[in-house]
Length: 183
Image (cartoon, rainbow, N blue to C red; front, side, top):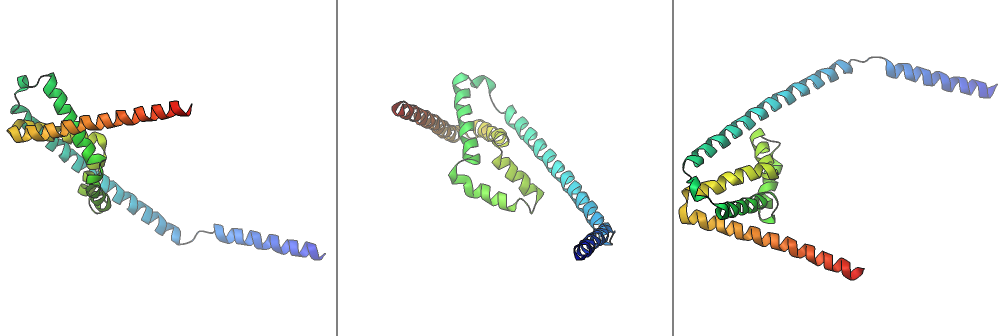
């Protein structure tokens, strides 16, 4: 009889606790309001973010148009195109991956929560494809407007790009030779 009574008390308490937990409280409407407010803030941030991205895209297009008028397109042969491409590759890698610019990337990464503009700059610096587009614009600007100084900077970037390719190839060859030694 004692076991039955203790079991009954446990079941009663369990169902009573279940009913207590399932009863609506006044906190639910507050939670719903907070949730709606957060969604509204998120939507406003998204709209602001989209506007800034549109402005950045328009700025890129305008700058590209300005640079394109001042370039002698007949001057660009396959050799010059290769040098420009290597320079763009190296500048992009410098911005997105190299240790020397890590502090700049870290700064924008820390500050991106404070401003939508800083968030977009952080994305541009950390995104390989985004940085590649802007690096191309910078290299073309150097090519069009800075004469010998621009050519020297472009050549330095192109030579370091070739050096990085050679470094990667040598690392691959070393790995292959080490694997053959182990076999």
